[in-house]
Length: 192
Image 1 (cartoon, rainbow, N blue to C red):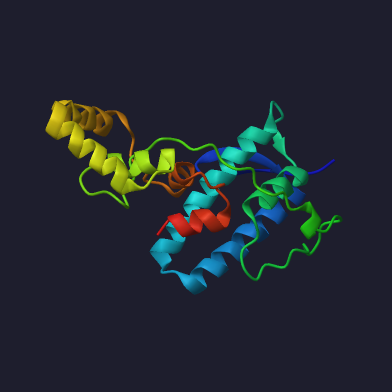
Image 2 (tube, one colour):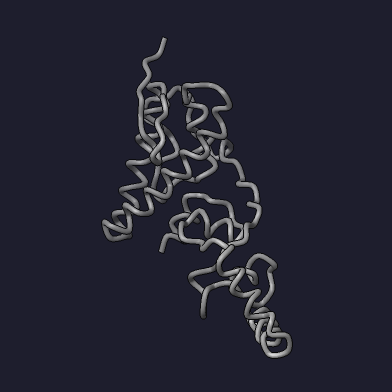
């Protein structure tokens, strides 16, 4: 019989067994230390919050009706997210070491259509469409300008997209926009 602990990860409550709690705690502590050495305190907290939200999403995916998060689920999540720089892949106490062979290659993420706030000129619609369709943003902007000049419907189409498309604000949404897996490294990269 193992003891369990109720924890809040990314704003959601989970029940972790004691081994899972230790492995996750060590991972998050090492991740915080790594971030503190590279980022300001506020930026590190924001990035860690994004990572915790991703961990929460992965826990919900992997639980599938079970109530307790086991050590194997935590290890699978860590394998998907990746280890922070300088983290020893060997846990201190656990019976099963985390080795590189355990690391899963993250699956390519399906792209989602968002407005791209980082590359916007007006509302980010053209930048988001260019990322989604993997086309140069200049081509999309020229097409919109031509649609405005020749049909005047282009302005209405742009306004509708501006209203309907959500803006990629979080690091996870940016990963979905660019079609990259939301690993810890990519979350850190797009949190800036």
